[in-house]
Image 1 (cartoon, rainbow, N blue to C red):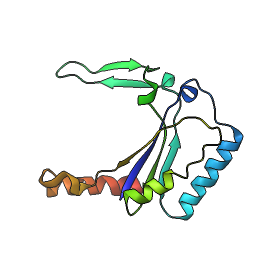
Image 2: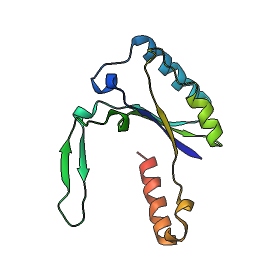
Image 3: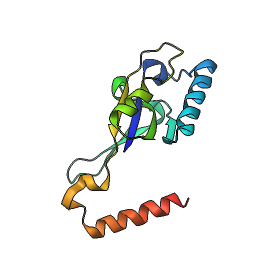
Image 4: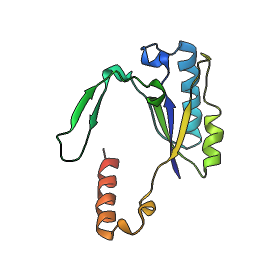
Amino acid sequence: MRFMVIMKASEESEAGQLPSTELLTEMGQFNDELVKAGVLLAGEGLTASSEGARVRFSGDAEPQVIDGPFAETKELIAGFWILQVRSKEEVIEWVKRVPNTDGAHHTIEIRRVAEMEDFGENMTPEIREAEERLRAATEQK
């Protein structure tokens, strides 16, 4: 099973405040543990929403572009990991070990990544084949 582990933004991250050298070091060590355990597929930090944009779709109207920053900090993402583990319980145990040297109040959300089987009969053999081709092409990069 794959899980996306989502580090929610904080007032500090949205203000562009960088993590301390100590936290970056500890986070690097944590990520190294994830790699050695064979569970880390991807992981990145994100810049503040002031550097981002949203594209809102509404019916037949032209998509609307909204430039950041965005008001609801608690709804924003500051970074993520994609972990491949055996269960939700296992990913929770990893997340409980995320370093928090700076003592900031963070919320980390855990969401299972949907697999083709999750889409039931809507995932026709043709769509499945096309999806597998796309995955193979992206893995070659």
